[in-house]
Length: 509
Image (cartoon, rainbow, N blue to C red; front, side, top):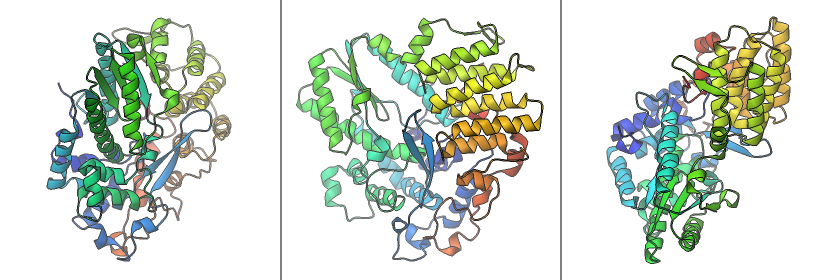
């Protein structure tokens, strides 16, 4: 069965899709954090009105205000790389979704994607709609990646001798907001009609600036809406690349693109080099640069189609085997499992296979009534894994929360939690870590104080403002339900153990 993308939806269903809490914020957050009350309130109060109708001052736009969006800092690696994820201001988010998903606009968008589609470039990253077998839209997208990038690459190895791999450096941060209008209309037309504020491309361009203090460089990252807007720009780049290669007479090639990642297949090294040059030429005209650190050419298409961490696990001795009823370990005890995963994390930090190993361990841990060996040692091992592989924070904290529950006294639990938190303070003010740490610590008698505003809302601290709404007329924000993003009864019933289903995209059983 063909997996649905958002482009298969009607305009009304597309609007509903964008306004789902999990698509408004595509970070994995504790189950008690839900943005639906805020989105529903804005949709109900604003309804069919436009941005000019809800301004406090008709002459002052949101772009005149700082911190209109809420930023959450995400750790990308064990060194100094961070990624700011933004929770878009709910008023601006709703108004932009409304502008893009009325009947005529949505038809324009779908028609434009059809126009931009080219024969030799396969796009695998249009936002997916989860099916009955998917846990979420995100898990559906990951499954699609496996089928249409990895598996498709293996298939193309029969036809093509070479594969060139590259991606765009800081793609979302590099998007020039005016290029969104170029993508909708073509560069020349967009420049000629730049002052026509009724055109959809210009509307989206201006909304991006409203969200970012008037800046024209970058779009906020962290929502399916932003992913979709980025896809419009990248589809435009695909079209321009195809036209350029056609002019040069290059026809024997195939490209798979997943967001800003490219796999280029050809039977000629010379053609590969020329394609790479023309790709960079087109992308630089859109303010993009290729990432030299992630660019390489290979003749071993089969091996390189599979990520190194997966290759390593396949070629080694898998520590987990699956029967009809359970998954069991080939190692003799939990500590050996933990040490194996720790060593794997050093070789392949932040890898997908590492996440799978941790998820499997977490599921096995849940089924064990007693933990053999020193719990403190296991906690130490997994904390170190999280520090070297920040993408594993959530699943590691789920493991840690289960291990902490095995400690016999509250005093012991508080001491170990404090030690874990101090280790994580090696990377201070990381909002995502604080949000998940709070899941574990909330019910402790001496809870930890957090700087992340979402944590303060969970604690019901007064005076918190996630978004700067000073530009909004009081009539439309009088009952703005900011504190309802935390569902108290769910928070109270789920802490302090993090359910594995909260942090894993897939079931391993």
